[in-house]
Length: 337
Image (cartoon, rainbow, N blue to C red):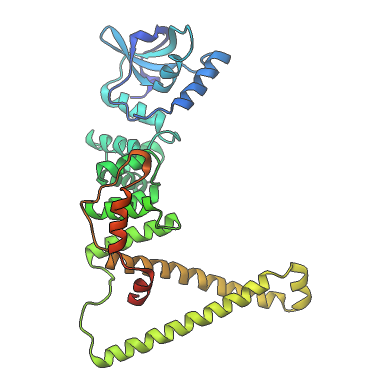
């Protein structure tokens, strides 16, 4: 059943006679946004009624709790316009509430994840949920994966201090490794969100023992070959640095200067630099992953290290110093790679 199929009437209801739905999927309401909406009510009035259903001698909100809360901020407001839907059961009330909130900027990732999980509890499949809300099935499943986060990390996600992609990679880790990755994240160890996600992926590989360095003892011949390979790789990186310096010199020239210098051959040189750019991008991606793997392999896991959600500052300075002292230096990481 949907709202249009229900028996509907619109009336002005005293604010005191309306109660929020305790199963409302959205738990966080931005006070600043509520005040903006209240200001709109003061200026032009209520443009859209809320939706309620009878609940004993009062009414329960089905859709529009944000408007109801904002109306409380309007001086002298005692009533609010509401559509009274007389035949909506708990399940449909919950679905209607989710429909209103999905996609709102102020609905947190964790609220969205829990809403989908609650629908699964009603017997809906991920495929059906995705169809209902215009999402992909993978999207719905990825959101629900966030419910695997530890409580303190879930709070950081809900507060927007950890972004969606990194949060999902964290959700695939053990609780101990979730804290390891978030501790480094809150310390500012990662230059980009991609670096943070890549490190979490490497921790996951470490947990599964996938793709990590071979632990077998090398023979003398194998050690000699490995040493030769490392020297060759270092030589290639040195050449890359020299090539990079040459490209930087080219980048200092203006388009007019380049056109004069490479007259008749600009396209050929552009293709050459473009090939270098694509190869460099691919190498950068792989090196970033290699760096994360090396760090994850050598990291000492500290499951007792807590992540404090309050203020987003993470562990204390003494704890950070202790962990940093145990972690390998950049020189050691480079040597291990």
